[in-house]
Image (cartoon, rainbow, N blue to C red; front, side, top):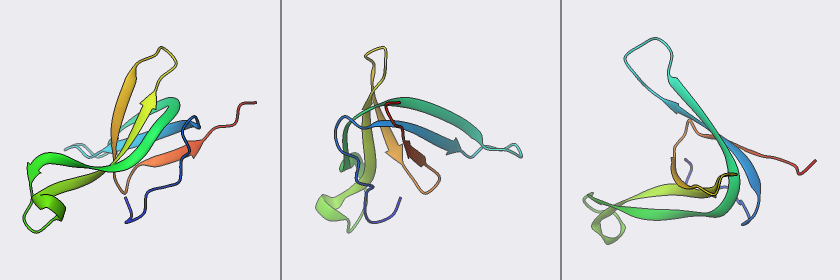
Length: 87
């Protein structure tokens, strides 16, 4: 993801598509839809020299799915986020 996170207000309904590289020709793709709880940078438990607080920081999007499940997505340059209307 870029240095700036997308502006996604709490309550916004979104569709997020992830691509995961694999050893085959085509990347795996997964799509999830839900309501934004929050979008932020969060540090991992992994150590990474010379980063803020000596940790690796990732862009994360927290969603509540229609069935109530809470998911945390790590965002990267291949993540596509589409805001959905309530129509």
